[in-house]
Image (cartoon, rainbow, N blue to C red):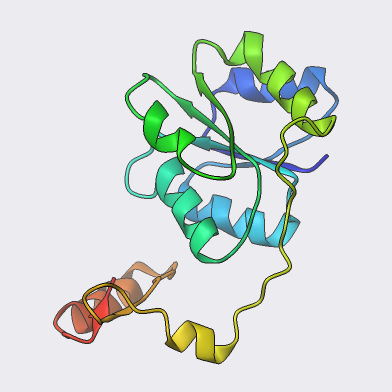
Length: 167
């Protein structure tokens, strides 16, 4: 089983070690998205409490791209539980204090086919589909993924002054 974890406490990695699973660990959201695309895991563990690109935003990006992958959300509090449960790829929500006792059970339930969510990386957008992704405002939506901070700032400055695009 391939698993990607994004900014998880050490106990999460310990649970996977006990299960003889070596997850691909990412320390921040963009690195996690890259690992999801590269390794095409069977399961993703997302941290809701990250700044900027948190687990909820990553799950939205995956849905936007048409990637169905089971997700377990982790957090410090129950504040985001309802928002996380609304995602169609949701299979669990754990507080960081519950990871050691409950993560293995959720992962095993998924591995045994009890989660009802099948991994799907098959959909490829055509150029026409990408060009027709409009928001309610009628402006084109853009998902900006850029590692170089200077280039990212330049692109954001150019696009944010335009009435044609929504970032």
